[in-house]
Image 1 (cartoon, rainbow, N blue to C red):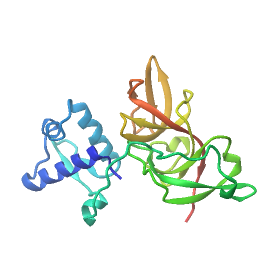
Image 2: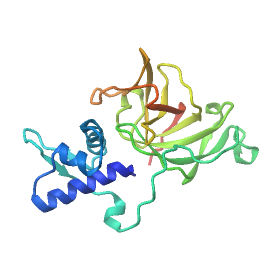
Image 3: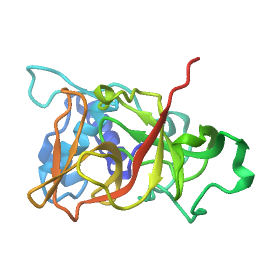
Image 4: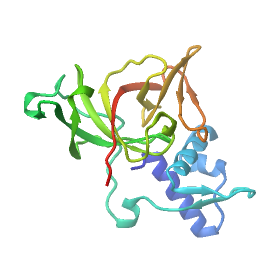
Length: 231
């Protein structure tokens, strides 16, 4: 699932390459998306590349290749409007007794995907439920997200894993959190406070630590458990 800006940029690049055979410049992309600076384009390009939608061709200027298109573009289905919240609506403070499937397990909602790579938006509605050991669940509200990407592999979090998140808006430096970036993209990263800034740190040397102002990042919850399914 792409954010609105990521989708717009991917479609612009795709159409330009189809028309001229050459990918657009950063200035052209900035103007097309009505962004104030090229840094925003760089962030979107990086997100699309890390999610496998585009590829940068080495040793060639302005060389971008569209690898795949989003599902809604290929199936013709209408794209739903983006909602920035990772969790939508209110939920009970603790799993109700009706959701307890066994003495040692709770049935929690899987609310969508979260990027362990580049920031992406998480789906805001329950798509399934998953049994979670009671040992992972403390007080407060919890939910589950499916991990997409490989930037947290050195923390033992793999693509396709399910992370159990305790909802909250605060975190201690060093904790792994779900963070909302720039009010529109959610990502799973290690949270660091650095001299008045907030750093979102990957656990994979392929990905750079990204630093933001304190008003650009909102903590949505912190990691309390991980579930891995074997097929």
